[in-house]
Length: 334
Ligand SMILES: [Fe+2]
Image (tube, rainbow, N blue to C red; front, top):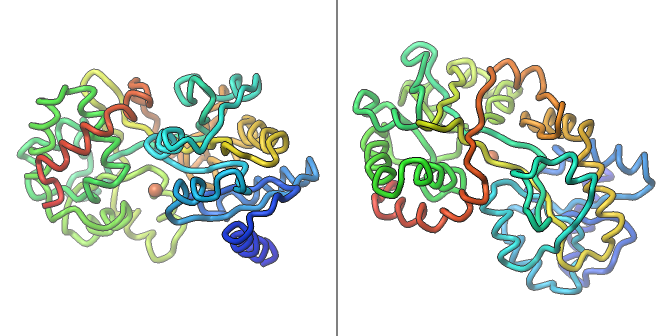
């Protein structure tokens, strides 16, 4: 309650005069309850308070509008496109830290230190236990006519789909990816709609046999009394690209360009990158920690192991434009 109040007050203050707090201020696209336990731990260890402004949209616009008066020290978001977008928008600053470098693999952070990954998630197939228990073993197979009228997915323009299509372009080339995406479209059971969990619900309801979704939604559904039946109706299948692995994306953080409390914010970044904190964070979110030697939660482990795709996330980010154009060309949502 107190923290909710503080968050609300902070959000209001940030909108108004943007005063400099003697704390660390976070603009987050991630829900506060996911990160709050860790922040409490950090405050306990360091005495530094953390304010989280949870934003649903418009973070970059807000940071740009606030400029030098922005109270934001750190930015929390998911997806390489959004992290890259923040860098492109000029609202981040580089950070160099031996602790961050040691705990975050090089392919999961910006070479210039403009953003750092904290956890990963895989984009997998949720396959009906009764009608498609094995699911498609590869992403390529989603275009196979044997899946005609059996696939559900969210919009082609959503960041998760765009990243997957970017990976398809990387592995199949532009022409191959076009043929593939047309094939996937022609196999859809219905027009793309709803979020990832809505696809699993559709499998549960018998509208389709396989759905595309991010791994952590399985954890969210399992722990939601209204959704656990949806989760129980599917197997988690980790498809691979031919010659590659399972598509993964990243959740991460960046130092805001005008961070008023940079030193304390860096302490928080280093705290969050520690193997212990990553495991707690990943457990809260049902994601995969990335520091050497860390393990996902038992629930997440129970879905099985997989080989992450070897494509560099920077390459995925670079292919965002071509991916969006391809999605438009094949009129994926039409
Ligand atoms: Fe999500």
